Image (cartoon, rainbow, N blue to C red; front, top):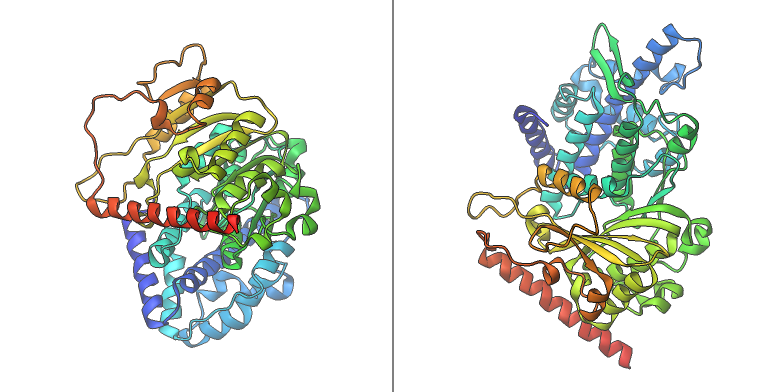
Amino acid sequence: MIAQEVKRDIDALWTEILQEADESPITVFEQISLLMYSRILDMKETTVEIRRNSSDKPFRRKFSKDEQHLRWQNLRRLPEEEIISFVRDGVFPHLRSDMTIGTAFAELMKDAQFTINKPSLAVNLIETIENLPLTEIGARSDLYEYLLQNLTRSTRSFITPKQVIRLMVNILEPKPSDTICDPACGTGGFLLGVMDYVRQDHTLRDGKIQLTDPEKEVIESSFSGNELKECREHFRGDMLHGFDVDPTALRISALNMALHGVDEFAIHNQDTLNVNFPERFPKVFSEGFDIIFSNPPINQKVNLDNVHKSLLRQVATRSAELLFLVLIIRMLKSGGRSAVIVSDRVLFNSFRTYLTVRKFLVDQHQLEAVISLPRSGYPPYHRIPAGVLVFKKDGRTDDVFFYEIKEIESSPGHKHKPIDENQISKCIARWRTRDIAKDKDRSNRGFFVPVEEIRQSDYDISYSRYAEPVDEEVDYEQPDEILERMKIIQREIQSNLTELTEMLR
């Protein structure tokens, strides 16, 4: 949890850079994040120095002998008139080099530039970052997420809430020996969720790292993953894979990984629906992964000429959301599992392409669960009803588990109600104790539905189709929210009509 004082400092700095430096929100985000990482590199170098004093084991340094002057502890002591040139010509080139973390990170950071030209603003930036609580990975995670929230508010972009990520990761329970992917990774939330889960799940009680230094007190505190043993090389190298078409999102993802202490990763600038994906990455296009997490774009339409034909043979559609579901099944190994966020229309829309994909999941694979998410759990610019599909490749669907995470109460007119962590924990616990023989009461939030009933219902897999109503106070949407949903539905209808017209030509 971030202290309110820290939030105020970040907000003030964000606004100052946005206004005085006339930068875009994404540039503001990168300037703050990269300098946060510069401070963390200095902390890691101090950790290396402490370890070298107590062990003969070789450690990889974050700064070469000739780069020691570029460390944060030197930067924060510079006079105001020297800071800009020092950061622009020294610190940022160092961040772009593969000395800092690895060639993948250096490649993604190759275009990063320090763009602030006002000395007083640079000083304020350094002072604010110096006072941020960066010594624990958990605190870094909270800070980075808060910066991402600022970015979404400024740009109306979208990130998957960390509560939903925690839910999906805990449902699939990844192991350190698994190979895991997000084919539309965005800012890397799922990849980090997996990393945190595996580290914590494989750390003994006494395995939490805490190294101290007389000047800075706690240098770093995190789960060491000291039970990983023979899987450590795979865990640190080939375990996580991410793809995204947006290079800016990938840079944010790389910083996200680095700030969380992930030293090596495979993140690539690639449209995974594109015809060139199997040519560039033949080993992963088909049966490459044990587990896939994803939150694919909901309203995006693709150019059919650019989509790989094997996907279109399964479902002829311009809907990126549907194509991603088909792609994910192709990318999974036989018996591999996936948890994917989809819009509600995927669950019940009677249009042929939606029905085709639902039949594909239910009849040719194993649909394990459908979890209904609260509408207001996402930022207010994305109030599209959504759910989580959990499925296994090549399995057989007999019974499907349905669960609803409800809205939480808030003051009237408050549009954005964050998803309740307690409800997430209850859902995880309910999933782990589910029982096909006992979970028949559909007035409860968790129950099973036999596959034959789903088939008889035109493959409708929405929670509301099968749940029995319970008398309770209803939290109705505001009129402007209903109107916005109607506009979304209208656009979807028009898009479907256009798609149908093109198919009939």
